[in-house]
Length: 216
Ligand code: NAD
Image 1 (tube, rainbow, N blue to C red):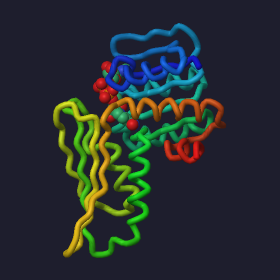
Image 2: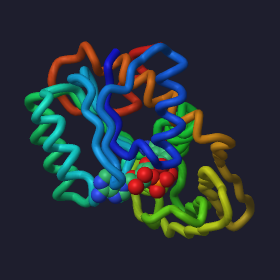
Image 3: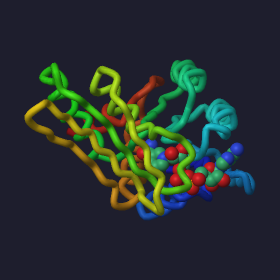
């Protein structure tokens, strides 16, 4: 496929273009603060940048009327509403986490959720020092899966790709569910699966869970 990438020069942008290149896809449109390259019309756009680039992403998806896979975190509710509106005319996959393991962790949280009366629950996350948003989008997804409020602790350390942990405690026992991304490649592979999924889908707003369920 011919694809476009917003946030091309970033850590995730580089990982995504490497994984798409290996799969034989051609980068025809790239956009970052250092410039724009438009070689051809993209059949699909991927956005892994910052919320400040969101308006440009919307503008290019409308211009090319093509599907979008967006993993940028820290989007506010107005931007999420704009994505919802845009999804009436194009197919979009949006997720704050494109790793399979995190989706499995969310399912575990859903499974224990009905049994937590009287238990304390806390979420913690660690990411590299350059991450802009806090708490992480994944920690917020964990809270949504939990279905109730829980404190979130955020650490910003070194080059950690992404660690998440949820700990449950009663007066007599504790247990935890945790996930570590050991490489950004795992997210890029999830983006590739999402691109293959969404390219032939009808307009609508899809999640990475939809992508995984479709593959089962
Ligand atoms: P990064 O800082 O390395 O890259 C961000 C890129 O966006 C940079 O190249 C930067 O120049 C570019 N950018 C900034 N402002 C811009 C603008 N106004 N216009 C165009 N480009 C602009 O960050 P990263 O580690 O590559 O992460 C990128 C995004 O993806 C972040 O929001 C991060 O939280 C998110 N992320 C999501 C997942 C997921 O699975 N959903 C996984 C990892 C990272």
